[in-house]
Every structure is written in C-alpha cells, then in structure tokens.
Image (tube, rainbow, N blue to C red; front, side, top):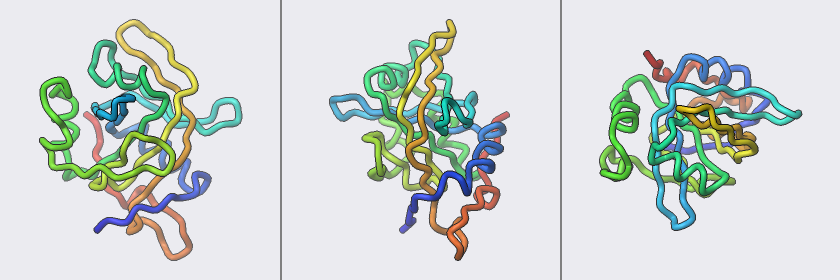
Length: 174
C-alpha cells in the first residue's frame, strides 16, 4: 500500500514549481452532492501571492470539471509518473458526463487532509487547494488557489523528511 505523507511546503516548493512548468497534471473537484470529476490540465503554475503559496490552474470553459470548480472552493492538483500517460490522456479526452474516470482507469480515491476532493492513491504527489480568485479569460477560467497541503508518496521522502520530486519521474506534457 502506498503511504502518503504531508510534506513541508518550504522544503519542496521550488522543486514543485519547476515540475509544474513542464508537466501536465489532473485537477479533481467535488460538487456539494458528493460527485467528483477530474480533467487534465497543461497550464498552471505555483508561486506566491499576497504572502500565500498559491496554485493557478486554467480550465477550459464549459468543461464538466468547470462546473465542479465553480460549485466548491476546493480541489486537488495531482501529478503522475511517466508510465501513467493513459490517465492524463483519458482525463483530457473523455468527459466525466459520459464516464466515471475513477472507475474507467481503476484509480483509488483517498481522503485528503483539508479538502473534500479526493487524492488519487496511484499518484506520487498531490496539492490540496482552496480557491481565492476566479477569473474569466474567454476560452478558459483561471482559478487561483491557496496551497493548503502538498501530499507525497512516502518513498520519495528521505530519512531527514526532505522530499525530492525529481525522483518521481513525472510525465511531461507535449
């Protein structure tokens, strides 16, 4: 069983920023009725805004996930290994209106520390987020969210508690 451990944001922040610049990820959100949906994103960043660590994600308007993000102020951003390309492909090409992506890809939902949207057990690293700003850019909606937690697979944390995201072999977007 994979064990997820919350890691110190200050110890991993620069590594996560570098990875987000070059990697695709999954955004998972939850509606108030308890349903979930996820989609692949290739546009995003991690940085600082108003002395808060933040994640910025861009979701195309009228995507099913857009409905979920607008209904709840919390979501997760999840990164995957290079050998998990099908997860990103399916989440980027299939609509949650038509299929249950968790079932389709045999993914396991795990309880997050701070948000109701689930973590994905099969992922090496996830970021729990709370929306603080939403902005319409025409084709896409930008969601700026405070980083509440970074959760990493324990096998990427050394004996001193430091996390090394470069060992995760995350998938690159092309």
